Image (tube, rainbow, N blue to C red):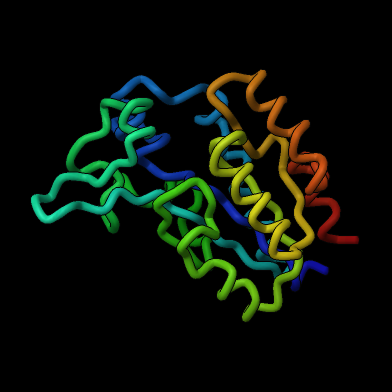
Amino acid sequence: MSHSTALIIVDLQNDFLAPGGAYDRGGAVSPEARALPPRVAPVARAIKAAGGYVAASQFTLWPDAQGEPMISPHLRRLRPFLKRGDFVAGSPGHGCVAELDGLVDVSVWKVAYSAFFNTQLDWVLRRTGIDHVAVCGIVTNGGVASTVRDAHMRDYHVTVLADGCAAPRPEMHDAALADLRTVAEIVTCQEFVESLSR
């Protein structure tokens, strides 16, 4: 099973989590989110050791002709601190957090919640022989939930790593997980790692 399983890491990027990143500057990083990289990295190492695949999504703000970020109106209302240079493709802030260095097999750049929307993720996973995806990252009720539902709609077997995800508030995280139980298996990071050897 391990060879047909992929870990999808949603948006564990420096601009979301690292000191000095866009969300840190805006005071929008939760302690729960900061705790994810050291929890998720061992899962990525375990799945690679078992012959599986690791994919990451990177939220991207593309610049317009004047170099200003093209930010969706709903996001601009939620995060008014986002500015020129944040989440620019290829920039340090856009990059995956340092804990994931050397662990990611493919990264896709996304502009909306789901790692599947307008990306080549499905194409890559199909050609790698993947039929089971385990999803983790931020935020549980946003990028993670949208990616999980899109994976389900594409007939992947889907697992959510409950303690590998975070939301702005614990009650939002818990509500999202409860809702996702209709389309995915919910396990801990440790339970998932243990399942790789079965």
